[in-house]
Amino acid sequence: MSTIAIVGATGFTGIELVKLLENHPKINQIDLFSFSNAGKKIKDFSNDIETEDILKDFATIKYNDYSLVFFACPNGTVMNAYSDFKNSETKVIDLAADYRLDNEEVWEKYYGLKHKSPEILSEIVYGLTELNRNKIKDAKIVANPGCYPTAAIISLFPLLKEKLINENSIIIDAKSGYSGAGRNKIEAGLDKKINNNFIPYNFYKHRHKPEISQELNKASGNDVKITFSPHILPIYRGILETIYVDLNDDMLHVEIINLYNEFYKTDSFVKVSESEFSEIKNVINTNNVNLSFHVGQDKKLTIVAVIDNLLKGAAGQAVQNMNVMMGFEATTYLIN
Image (cartoon, rainbow, N blue to C red; front, side):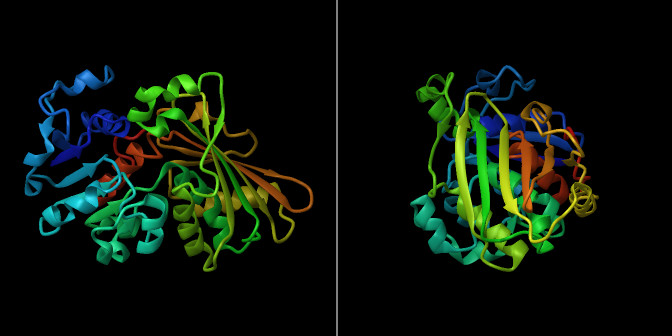
């Protein structure tokens, strides 16, 4: 049995972590920390959790008391805390972006901060469990992937790995529920702005673009060219990505299905549809990635990928990584 801490427990992903972990069969204690809400009950922030725990002040955390600490905090938090936990035995999962990118200059360009521990960027394991399970198992720090990158990378990795598509003409048209913007923006009125609306944003400068490119480059071995267009949907949770690629040679639909079934044969959270379009409603409150494939004329292929942005795109994937890091079954207490 293990003792776990969640830092930033009152945000949307923090609440999802509490919901997943409060009845996890391998966890015997969870301590919840906050920067600004210490002394309040966690139930004040959600009616969907059972625990009556009082939030602790993050300034009082003692890392050696915990087997693993989740940081569900703004960007910059973990790199600032690194010097405090680096010599402890504690494992860390960062749900923000401090260690997702390998390149310090690229990170600073997109995140607008000076990186405080660039010397360890090359050592951090990127926490896309389906691709990096063996590395995650032995990691001290795992960078939990972004929500858009999770769907995009799982969708495209097999095709790039097998050199089956044109690497210079990939279009990722991505749509997310507004919970992806976070509690602060919703409280500032985003939920009202998005009502009966559909908002494009941050074309060519979204922070998830270099993350997607980095991991797809690893799949290909080359510099992959992508166009990434994010949008906000008038729904609370869920992501749908429509991905357009050009096949190098004609392929039958069944050949693509067989490729993905084989590539992800040990990954129970990746669901490959043989006929139906993937829809957001089918993944809500699960840790699944649902994929569907649609072959057109002239070697065109369209992939539709859906995930729950708060689960497989954040908290669910973090628990999946925790399970692997702690030696549990990866699927423990996750819905698929």
